[in-house]
Each structure stands twice: as structure tokens, then as C-alpha cells.
Amino acid sequence: MKLKSILSLAILILLFSGCRKNDFPGGDKKNPADVANAWMQMQIRLTRSTAGYNSVVSNRSFGYAGITMYEALVPGIPGYRSLLPQIGGAAVAADKNRDQYYWPASVNAAMAMLTKSFFETTSPANKASIDSLEAAYTAKFQTEADVAKIQNAVDYGHKVAASIFAWSATDGGHQAYSHIVDPTYIAPVGEGLWVPTFPAFGPPVHPHWGDNRSFIANIAASTQPAAPIAYSANPKSPFYAMVNELYTISLSLTHEDSTVAKFWGDQPGNLNVPAHATNILTQLIVKNNFDLGAAAVAYALHGIAMNDAAISVFKTKYQYNQLRPITYIRNVMGYSTWNSVIPTPPHPEYTAAHAVVSAASATVLEKIFGNYYSFTDHTYDATYGARSFNSFDDYAKEAGRARVLAGIHYSPSVAAGLTQGRKVGYKVVQLNLHSFNK
Image (cartoon, rainbow, N blue to C red):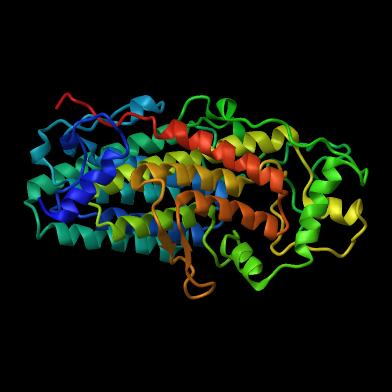
């Protein structure tokens, strides 16, 4: 067996210890991962350029995209089974033997259909790009397989996408891009509670996101952190000390500190949080020459983790409604012109969503690539430069720390968020994808 094939198998074996080596995707280079990567890059492009696709909404779209990719392919992966029954959905059966399908065409058809459904309000230019990507792979596949197998795969891919999209519409986040703000929601008022922040003073977004249906049942309830530090305006209190730590850091930011804050910032022109995390995964899939099956597994687990992390953290945010640093520093400490490095997001502070999502992402990546896998993130080479990490834990910690450096989260909120995200990730990697009933 070639070295690359052995590597692909070994990486996937880390996902589920105790199973037979030949029960994992990997080694079939007839089906490379390029179609999977291309569709995830399309998702990244669309979340960057479609109104309403902030980080919260995008976590959901990446979750369903990864699941759809996997489900469109899984009947063609020996030893694997549908994820859907484990995460609240219903498996879509293939009605022919697996060798009667050209499985890359199933992924292409399913992803095109689901993407059009999720991004129905995107620009005409983006819609044309979706069609062009689908057509390019359709043309490519016509040179690789016979017409009947391609059509069988396309039909199955459409069936999968339609089923999953219909299921997604019942989770509480359907068409969330159009109702980011709930006009009926009244934020609680009181000492130490969140209020709209400078400069936009926008209303709270996604106040009910924590009540959405998660892929892992009851994920929000089972991963909640302890209550935050009790509010106090007393300069001798732990709360004051927590805010003063952030304020003191803000007075002496180095160029490196500012770069880190902006590198991980969810700002216009940058990728949002889940898009950035997905782009890291894509870089690693390409670097390690994953085949299509291995890529589909990785995208599915990673997307599930990010979606459920967002649900968990927004449950926390609107339970405690903790005020943001800029509010306390200006109104309590008296530094009325102080400002954060990046604008403060319009939702409560505790816990830090970036830390939660990044830790959930890192936990899945560790299971795929190993705890001490060194890598370089090239997402922003042209603007902030590449950033290298000795482990995925280092990546998550820097992403979380960036929110303190940016002036929008307290250190304890980041620490609690990293633990919360890890809890989400650990539950996701316990999903059982393999089956011995071939």
C-alpha cells in the first residue's frame, strides 16, 4: 500500500479506536476530495458575501453542509452508516447496489441543491457561481463514469439534500438570516446586565438561538458552564479586577497583539468564525491528501461541532446577560472614550462564543489529526500573514485570547468558553459512523 494511502487510513483510525482498519474511508484515490473541498470553499464564499450570514447563522449552514456531504456519500463507503438516526434525522436509503452509483456525482448534486436552498437570498452573481461549480464537476464526471451511474448518483444526491433541508427547516433556525433580531424580545434591565454598545448600539441578536434543536440531543443543557463572576462596581471586587485586567492589557497592546485580535476578528472583509475554522480544515485535508470519504467524515463532524457549540454558547449568553467590557469601562471605571480594537458584537458577553466554537473545532481536529499536530493557517497570508501552531489546543487558545486582546471579552469568559467548547466537541466525536453490517 502506498504511503499516502496508509496515512489516510491512519488518520481516520484516530477517530474511532477499536474498529478494524478496513472499516474506514481512505486509500481510494479514484475519488479525491476536490469536489468536497470546492463546495466547502463555495460555502465560505457565500457566508462572506450573503446578507444575514453572520457567524451564528453560518455555524448552522456549515453543520448541515457537512452532514449532507457525508450522507450523499455514505452508502458508497464500505463499513460506514448514516449519521442521521443518531442526530435526530432519518436516513435516506439507496435503492441500488453501491457499485451502481458514481458517488462523487452524488456529493456534487446534493451540495448544489442544498447550497441553493440555504442561500436562496444570495446575489445573482453568487447563484451563477453555484450553478457554474455544479456544471464544472458534472462535465468532469462525464469523462470518468458511465451515464447511468452518474444519473443514479445525481438522483440520490437530490433525494438526500431535499430530505435534509426539509428536516433543517424544523430546528428553530430556518431562514435565520432574515430574523437576526427578534422585535418581540425584551432584554432584561438591571445592574450589570447587557445593554447595546458603541458605536452601533444595535439590539440583541439571536436571543432564542440557544433553544434551537441541536444535532447532539440536549447539548446546551449538558455543556453549560458555571455562573460568571458576580457583578460589582466596587473597585475592590473580583468583577472590577476582571475588567481592569482587560483595560490594563488594552493600554499596552503590541503590534503582535493587534495582529492576533484582527486575525481572529469577525469583521467585514474577513471570514466569519465558522468559515475561518472550516478553511483551516480544508487546508489540512488538502495537505494530507484526504480522499473523498475521509473529507466527508471530517466536514460532517466539524460542522456538527460548530453548530452545536453555537447553540450551547447562546444559551449561556441569554441566561446570564452579562454586560460587555466597553459598557463597564466607560460607565463604571469612567474612561468615557475607551474603545475596543474591533466593534463589540450585539449580544451578551458570557461566555465567549469564539472560544466555544474554536474549542469544539479543535477537539474534532485533534481526533482526526492528533493532539500534537503542528500546522500553519494561511487564511490571511495577504493581510495579516500566516500563523503557525504547535497543536489544535494552541489554535483554540489563541482564538479565544484574541477576544481579550480585542477588548470584547473578559479572560474568565474565554476560559469558561474553551471548557464549554471542549465539552461539545467530546460529545460530537463519540458519534458512531461505522457499521460492521456491510
